[in-house]
Image (cartoon, rainbow, N blue to C red; front, side, top):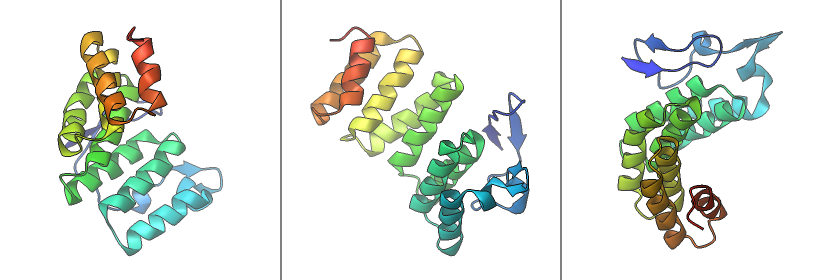
Length: 169
């Protein structure tokens, strides 16, 4: 069973399985229809996914759900991406960010570790790991990750800003 945190009124729920493609039962109802039918970028990403399922297309759908603030659906699609490609560093990195944004950085540590393992030269993955460590109160370890991110990409302003936040400037 997959544990999924929802943001609209409940704290946690369990789902028997994670679907690879959304069904009508997972649609988010709005006034006059579903968000999937009303939001063109999301609708286009879902159509592309349904025509040709792939980890990249699940990540694209997740990005659209995240843009709309529907984090549980984003998380589900990122999970589907990792099931199709267990080495999908970008999906693990995005899931780790969701855990952090939900206020559970410790639950994102495993995803973050996988992202860094599968993409050790990714400044973004090291930066995400640093943000999780900082949120968990591990500032020395966070500083190391931000420094790794900057070593990999000296132009990574996001990593430099985060390094300064933990006193590493």
